[in-house]
Length: 332
Image 1 (cartoon, rainbow, N blue to C red):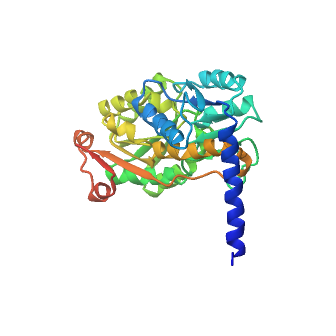
Image 2: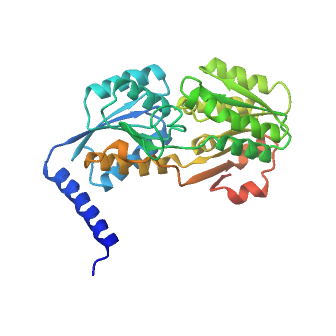
Image 3: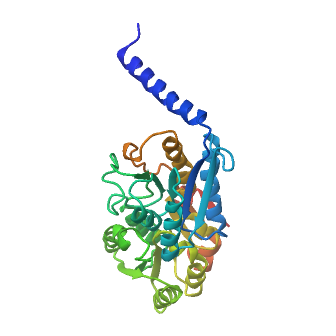
């Protein structure tokens, strides 16, 4: 006897395989537009895109084979994102992929019909990309990066590795950050005050702003820095941020591991390469006939902490065992 639940599951499998067979038999080369907010020469960015393309290939969609990918690199520049978003929409691809909040916003301005899959926006509901995480409801869905509570965790970790802090600046570009930076600010300010540290919102739009924020922190002892994920801007400028933090003896916490591998002190956040790898599954499902409106937004499942002992020593800090034990990677 076949149970009702097994029978329904079997019908679902038949429907799925029917879509797969149809996608495989029509022989048409599919087109994927890709909008990346980072610099094309950034090794971290290239590794993340490689994770996405390899996952797609594993699902049967190899660039130059069954699909053609049109990739645009915006290098953290909002004007370029808007220009490339327009270009990609005009190509009328089967699906467009974006790895950032401002990139997704730029694409949304250009089309409300072409399917869009995002990876790593922090607040897709607040930024108006989807109606809800469970029911996106439009032409956009994807994989979010982190909730606003993450900012509280960053503040806790920074005061844990640098217990003498008196004030902490939260750096972000309001033109590219989720909610113009507001998504994380309340959580950050609450956690900072709980740790008896003065919170400072530090919006930056260019190199001069970055230098002003960090040098002002260094004028007195007890300054710390947290860099917000913001659609590629701070990542593109990460070497300048790391260098200025070192020159001004500022302990800093970063959202992604690339900062620490380049000499930063500490990072904590979702594994972005893993998010981009997982997001390939939604591109696959859309190419096989499913609709973005029916695919719930997914949250990160893998997080990573990286600490640089050499940088800690240069800052006169002793990394506590609580951080060493939790670190996924320790750079010596």
